[in-house]
Image (cartoon, rainbow, N blue to C red; front, side):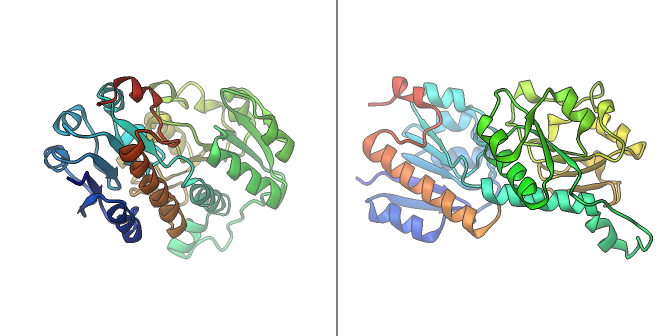
Length: 321
């Protein structure tokens, strides 16, 4: 009997990769909805061996329990924990989890740079209302970019702006990145120092309880008047009330691609630009790379029991025979 694989949505997993799964001897079921309820997902996974998560559904403990035969869950998203909140439970059930980490780094970095350009030159504001005849913006040369997190995306953002404009780079992270410093002249500083001295603050940290309200009412006051905050991390990395307070004072400009905040909806594009559908990763190139990763990974796991892209290697201790 052929092993069965569920694939959700149509954007991230390509038809040719679906055919690769069939050519490898698997039976493939495509659920085309972007969003799926927990109960619907429970039914969909009830009789499959592998599951490629390409939509916006959440894998809960109830879903894991419904997937009696599940051996692998592969997601095209880099933020895999937000889509698989029951990841620890899945690991204890011996289910391998794969994320196409890094597949979206180029597209997200490019989008971040585009948002920075928009905020520094106020493109959305000027184009949305035809005003601004007497409006003046700033050049990038001479500005300081503060990166909170220099993983795959933050690293590329820093290199792009430094190479293009000679933008000065500061960064804060758990560990010093000497290679990044050598390439850009960046300086590793504390969060407080970064907030005090950066003209542009670009956030690229993973979602976790430790990072929640990393920028808050206590430290957001340290930012320079006229500073730009770009949030490419997750919505609650910034305390909303603290951000609103600074926006009301007219001190900051903000842009984000991490989900829509209703509290910010009333502000004009001069102050706030936010996206509700995580637009940054949506390029043809990214979807091809991510689709390729999850396709090969799920074949490896269901055939050989493991894969280099697995993000929970301890699953092997609990793996089903």
